[in-house]
Length: 291
Image 1 (cartoon, rainbow, N blue to C red):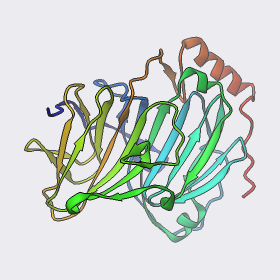
Image 2 (image 1 turned 60 degrees about the vertical axis):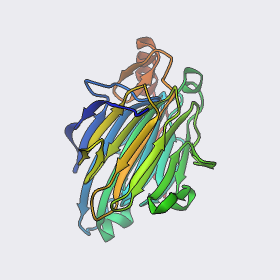
Image 3 (image 1 turned 180 degrees about the vertical axis):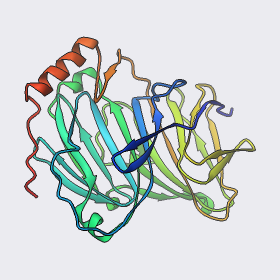
């Protein structure tokens, strides 16, 4: 039985610094998909070669209660945080940070990328942590492109990269606390990717550019699709003469209360207030820009 599309959403436009962003989750129709409570799509941004600016903290900000996951279609991002973690990842890689009980981080264009120029094109997800993991110490992982399993799909359909979770025996190095997944699927020209969903999980697809055909209808160019609970069969057809990108994500429904405000996602309003209190009292530490 086919899964039907229950929600389509074209996002809310925003500007973050010099980047144009499309805010996909949460929205009026769907607040969450599995444990995912936030999705920002960064449109392709052309960085002209320039004298690089060293980070000075003006974009640093706190998080608590979530894991952030920034995935790069192209470009290069540099990460600093108040736990002393540091990393640079480039196209095909990802920055994963478990904010746990509180951290301050600064994620920005690397100095080498600023100097050489290029196109930044990326996504950022927030993954809601179970209550027991919200009180743990923060952690960080720079996921390099070669660390992500990439699978050749049958019959020349395309490729699938396991960004988070598992697929046919291949596992992402990213730590998870509930059943969840993000797959980057690249469908070859005039091919159809068939996917069998697992019962009991929530599913959504994000199509960043071009378009994909589902049941004879075209969807894409920065569009989010959320699928109904019923059914297991999904077919995505590329009718173009170029490879098309598809992000398929979801997981187990988050079962605990959700209280979110600003950069904090907790289980009660009191915990949100405590998160702000601890941040302003300096408990999250300070970033040392030593690299």
